[in-house]
Length: 517
Image (cartoon, rainbow, N blue to C red; front, side):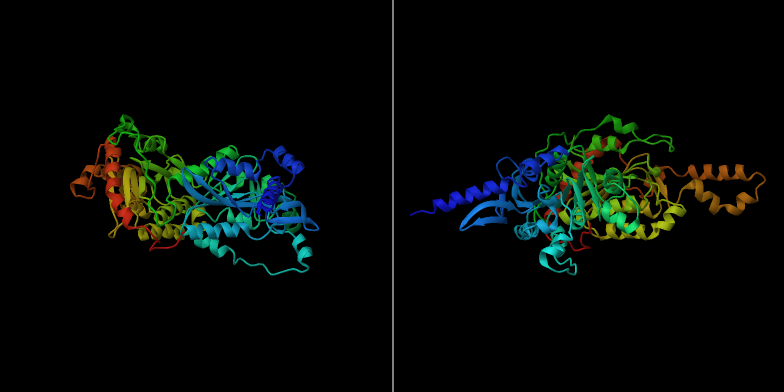
């Protein structure tokens, strides 16, 4: 006597679960241009590697001792492999009560998070779910006091393994917070929204009628830094999730994954010799610098619409993964405002948590000035950036491309016993403050007392400019290594080879501040 009848019954009930919310609900979901959760998992996985957990969790219809139907839980959880490496995930099923919390069965997402924690593997959220519902009150026969005890695991998880959130529909309440409790997140153009509470709740609270798109689509959430990246469609969003994870280790205890280099380690790109204009008032695109020195096609940019004065992302140098940041002179002259500072902190903490060397292409005119930034608290924000960098211990290398001024300019350097190198191009110049503004302050009385104050100011500025040559700085060993810009890639390759044995000694928990979303 075998257990084949029970196995056949299990197969039948699994079939019920795979129908999700039913054909009509799935067709409605598709009609809005969205994939089902199971179609999303198929994009996430290496083909054939999906292992589901809790498949038949749901509400069953019983007739005697027979199950005649099964409405599954409105979430799917399990593991897949991405590029051969195991990853845990959970995904909301919007075809069943819009993914509302009162249609959940158990805590499948929490189970998947705990599994990722214990197994020391990355965790991916495929978010397409609303938060709580007043229907729950009627179901349980009472109201209740809210609590966030379940987010303890979510917070701890970020200190141990890579966590990614893909926003693939309308996300509100706790799922909206979960969209940010991660190291990387992405939303889909025209079909994703994120908000604390939906339009009806907003209308009740404020009296204002608003659409969900106006409340929280990409026009809002990409520019305020809530969501990092935008995808053209769901397939692109999942591809970005897979690519982000390709740079990171399975956990803080693992070495970041290297790949066989396909680019010449000694490549010297001729464009670098003239990429920085001689006219200091002219701009250039730092992404062209990145393309010229990083492994070709390896740069993965993060948060391109937020804090645009700084470009941040992940890349590879001779097959080794690294964090990358660069000033962008097109936006606010490249100076660090609060948004660019927050973006910088995120990258430094990511690199510190997962042991990625950090590469900075510097052209920093200083902290952003003016009453608007002062009202927002630029001084405190700047102090946070300084503290985060100085407490980091991951190997750090800086390529000074043009200018370094003030405290923000000083961020290109790090003291202490952590590995650090600096290379300067001949276009380098810097100081505590810019000559153009500083002369008017330092020589105020001399300028005011001159017969021609404007001529005197220009004379003083010209005198100071004449001694601003980087060669004078190099003669005093203030610049320890000035280089031909075309030598940048070979020198970076050499630095990363020095850094990698140190990376291997730093595996495990951070000694500095913990990662915050």
